[in-house]
Length: 105
Image 1 (tube, rainbow, N blue to C red):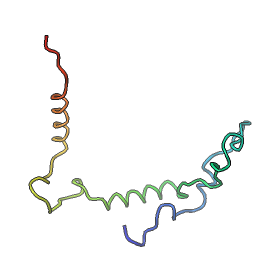
Image 2: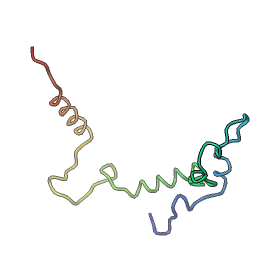
Image 3: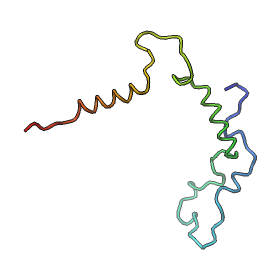
Image 4: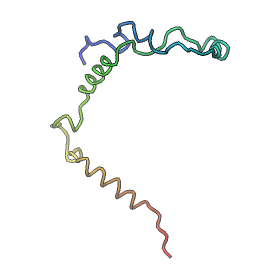
């Protein structure tokens, strides 16, 4: 992410806030009667961007993170070797077998 990229809350088109909760067609209790005034807000603290922009933003952030699935990591020692995901599954199952309580009759 470059220093020029804006936060998700800084992006916006001023339409998500207006369409977030539809108007109710039945009479209900007013929030002012249920909650104290210090808990009520005028503006919802959600990003004011369309869904497509949110997906683009987080996909771009995910490309910054580096993991085993992203490519080769040249640094490290023998203790930091690549372990295929199938080995991780096998190690969890072997731990489950070792920690299971068996009753011997």
